[in-house]
Image (cartoon, rainbow, N blue to C red; front, side, top):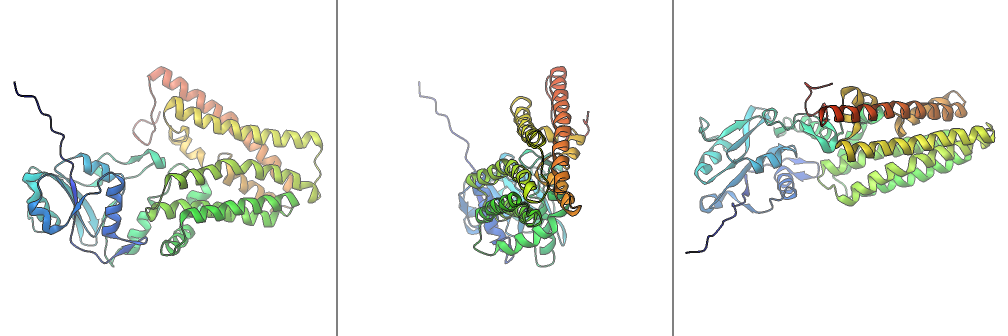
Length: 392
């Protein structure tokens, strides 16, 4: 008996069709596509002239296409899929995964030569692909597939920039920073300044703010603190738009975010004496204790939700996502502290942060308890962003 032989399915190779002179966030569009597919595990490429000789599946993409990252794994996993993109001249096929028998059809579609779509190819818009929920960025948003030229480059830049934003985040990051962060990110994208360098500058500002808080120079400290929060937005956007995000950068950025807020609150409390607002020992201990305990416990609650509920607690229900905008985290707390300095009563700002932290702790405890009850009752729970029709 002859030994049985098993064959692994052939992996597709990438072929970028046509040319484009458009640069987007420090890369040409064809280069961006190559980086995106390489990050998804498809690094082997051929050029247009090699298509006729290639045996096996192909990923074909227009050189002037701009694809949102969630579309890449879908395209890799679905043979005979054609993705439609929006451009200045309307909807056009921008990418497809074709097998040997449909290779020529795919090429003709992307080059604009095919009058009708072959029946064996499935043509879909991004909204048809059930890819709107992006857990990594905690948001629900239909991914984009675009065709870019000089007529719509600015619109595409804005769309790709906003596509890097998280859906569940604080009100300052979500409502105030996008426009200035867009212009700063676009300016930095063409320079040697890296996202990690921006994060390093943000880390330096953490210490500067802490120093001035300790001295009771709250206006200067707040200026440094707000600039730090702005750079904390820019570094992530710069990494995602320029396709330079890394595991170390993610650890550096999120580690900094996690560690520094308690030190600011302690420094603020100590600085009150220098600013002429002496707190009694018991009051000082209670305020700092409530803020620190509330901060640590609420972060632990978020970790418990991820581990035992399988999701971020802030994206369970629409109300949880809305509350994330104002919950007692760094930026909303900075708003309270800033208002107190404007009023000339930084001591009241610390009291307000303590009170809001305690209230949010209770609300998050109720939220977490409700989530566990719902999981026990239904067997599992999921984010409303995955299924907006189910918002219970």
